[in-house]
Length: 199
Image 1 (cartoon, rainbow, N blue to C red):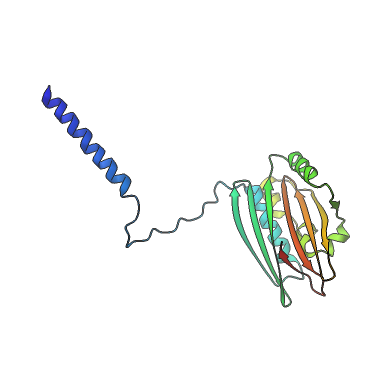
Image 2: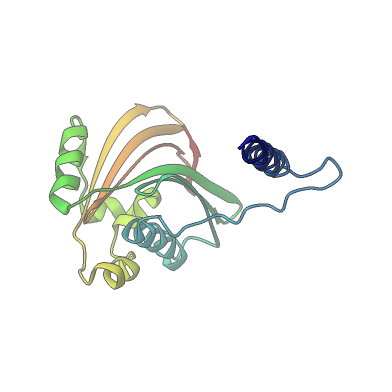
């Protein structure tokens, strides 16, 4: 009986030592570097990704852009911060927008309604003169969104003037595309060619 207890204690000690060794050996040694982890997009909402891609395509299709770059930082699977950097003539336009995917179009509409106090619904003509809202014009065909959802989304845009100065103005924007709501604020320089910087 004593030998069985001794064997059992020895097995437990060996198992504990091996487990401890496995835990401590998971980090790389000082002269090795761990390979960078590839970003996983498998959990990100496909409809939200489609809306972001459609906005990028709208800028690519616009006649005034020469270069279009975007950087996406996922907050969670249904929220992303997207920075667009657009080159034209000898200038750049850059802003960061928050994209949020809702469970339904009605929830997205309710959210947009809850935050749009003091905003004005923009008209198609007004959108054409505002390069920041190119994504809400007919230039945006929403093909990626349509491919994912099998539905063409309705788009509604709102603007709110925050500051109007001789050489620039700062405005906030809300754009609802189906069940996705995009919000951002940007300062636009008043010149022959529009330019903007993140606020």
